[in-house]
Amino acid sequence: MHAQRRWLSPSRNDRRLVLASLAVGVLCSALSLPGYAARQGPSRQEPSRQEPYTRQEIDHKLDALRADILAHLPPQPSPDPNAVTRSQVDAQIAAVRRQIGLDEKESGVRTKSTDENVAALERDLKQTSADVSAIKARLPTIPAWVPIVISVLSAVLSAAVSIGVMWSNQAVTTAQRAEDRAWTLIQRWEALNDKIGNALGSLGQPQSLADQRRYNEVLEVGNLYDTIGRTARSGEANAGMIEAHGLKPAARLFWDAPTQARQALAQTPGGTVNLDAPVTTWTNIEPFAA
Image 1 (cartoon, rainbow, N blue to C red):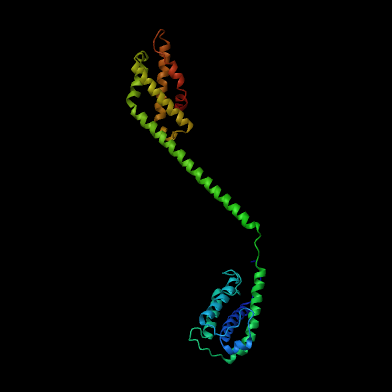
Image 2 (cartoon, rainbow, N blue to C red; image 1 turned 30 degrees about the horizontal axis):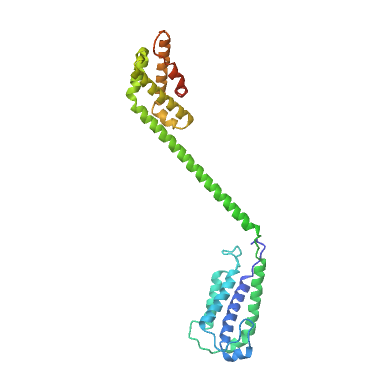
């Protein structure tokens, strides 16, 4: 509540709480006496009763009064140093219980002071109820649209968090796939180590490629380097992992070999070996090796 809101001073609050509690306790004790009940007549709150109130019933009434008072105290801890606290209310209620002998055997004896103070206590109880009603009236009301706005904002926030988690998971999955793809290509490259050496030797002697086995080895190695270059450039495979294993200089070395072999074959007309077809399809080796 705003700073301008003024709560009851501690002395007045304490007095009201004590008197209100005493009123209920004393009234309940007084009503337990048949003679007093006969003089007072029926109450507006409940019908006249001939039997005395039990301690349990009086306890319930005191508990109800305490709950109603606590429900309308300022928020704890209160910025107002003079505001009544929960412990003060509990202490006063406990004092009332001791004064009316709820912790002793039920005696049914009515003192003169009880009769003399009933009217005054009833007035203070009514005033306390009026103060509570005034506090209720000053409490701020929440517009009907506020819960709706809060619900919408909560839904939007929940959706945003879900989308963020989904994107994060997708990014992790994509990165993992790229690493897996790179590792697969690295293992395949290592497995072809012997064929790579054979292919480089055959390209150094282009006429030997008339042997279909040698020619096929060159095609297999060239296709692998072209795949490595394509996936590394597109991000399908982790380029950092591929380059860290030395595949980039290896691809450059291989690319130089068929280029030189084509030049040598061009100077030997009438030959049966032609590298133009496969070399022109390897479009990713040179950009990757550059």
